[in-house]
Amino acid sequence: MTKSLTLPDAKRDHVSGSANGSIKLLEYGDYECPFCADTQPIVKDIQRRLGDDLLFAFRHFPLINIHPHSERAAEAAEAAGAQENFWGMHDLLFENQSALEDEDLVAYAGELGLDGTRLIREVTSNVYALRIRE
Image (cartoon, rainbow, N blue to C red):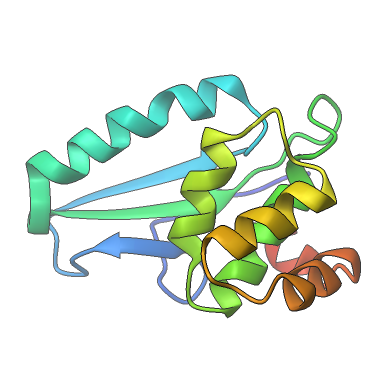
């Protein structure tokens, strides 16, 4: 998979913070990568410290050759985003990297008050596969 490095784009990426922020931070991440998970508290701290000066964006980069659940997890995050809770699922996936089976994804959807049946249907149908591979 080849991706080009570009500035955060609210139409393509999931963004948090002010669009007018003077600092832009783009993370390429994999929900099964332990190093990506290790950065999450740091990112949260940066967001807290910089407030409206920061625009943070997340872009999927599943390393499927070494992380077999990463693409499915990314699709679950997208499916949660379609139900207006990308960031909630994003956080749960990183917090629970060792539990990324379909039944886990449905459970996380339930924790977030999402429609788990819809979420897993979209995940198993690869509705968001192209978006993840952009």
